[in-house]
Length: 56
Image (cartoon, rainbow, N blue to C red; front, side):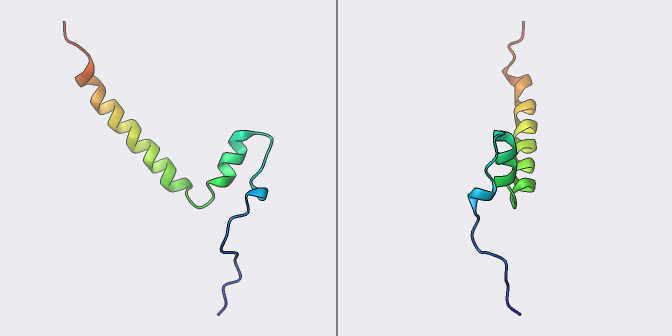
């Protein structure tokens, strides 16, 4: 069976006047990875923040 999907990403299809829409289109196959990385960074930052607050 022959795979007919293109092996490259055409950025012309991702262009949009709204930058966020263009960014969303560029992240086509990596959305879950980016969202998971963002959530893990948020959890890490929140878990470290109580240690940074000086005690009185």
